[in-house]
Length: 461
Image 1 (spheres, rainbow, N blue to C red):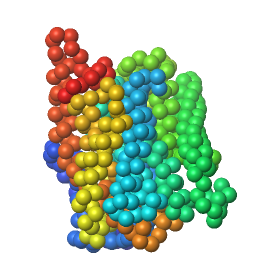
Image 2: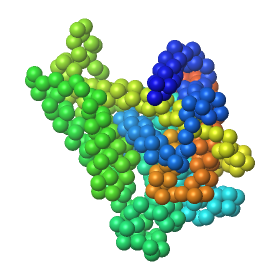
Image 3: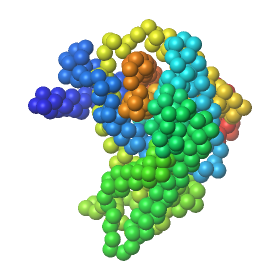
Image 4: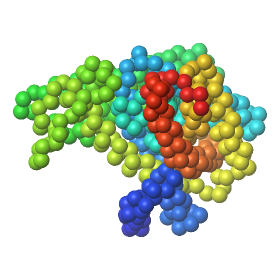
């Protein structure tokens, strides 16, 4: 235990002192967390040396928390009415693109990996979601951001981590280890496809979104009501973040809905309160300047300002918490990786997923949409796989996925996640920097032309 304390202390202090220097490099921070984990792993120092299959419960809980916090943050940042056409891009990506991705990966699993249909669909569902935790560099930068690229990738990551759950259940059901088979009366009988459509798709998705939306709305309205009462100050927004996440997740799970979708919906409901209070203005209400010696919570604020302060304070705390959890999980992932996980399958599976399946699925999902050219190409490239995939893998193992199937899927998923962290981590800074410069240049065209990210127009690239 003493060695653990020393190791954690050295890693955290080293990251603190080196991060300002590392941030100048064209590489995302999760890449450095991964390298730190690899250094602590069995291949170098051997401080972290445990098996994912045997210790799946620990990794499941840590990754679950990281994904929940990130989904709540994404929901808070999606400051647009559901009637806004910007929602069309993430909805297409989180539905049609995701289903095509699952189908293509499952086909590769059956034809090229010799997996059973159930295991292949499970692999597709594990790898299909893009990651809301590691995709922070390509997500919305602030509440006023209307860029279709960032909005699309943010919304996709927020929605498809929950939307992939029905297909995880489908794979587990076909493998005979569906966690709720007894509850549904399937027992030892063959998996019921109609029951899956009604229970795992229709009910669980709707229940998750409804419970999350209701929880976020009620807690948000109650907070603003108490906040505006004379002489009453509510400043412990850290408790509110954790409380809303826990409430929305628990409320969804107790009615057998998807907790991931519920937490995303709760975050969006809280942001929608601010959007509604501001009269659906493009920019949120401006907050008054801080008075020395006083907390901003003590300032008398109008309705839109009070709602904006609530949203800003929640986002600020969530960003810090998300950063800590991201570092922890990626270091753990690097620490459990061994050479045994790298097989010949990964050599062709990684380029197949990132260079063929993802671009094809995006092209199908965004067919006949106004998103073209550079934006579509970047959306196709930044299909980042990460912590969400690790969660689904460990969830399946904890459900009762055992034996050779568990070992093989573990190796494939870990290697593809690590590959994604590296290749996307190296490319995200230069590509997004180039994109922002290009976008800024187009917005300054003197002949009345506008940047497509602001007006939703086409970008022919």
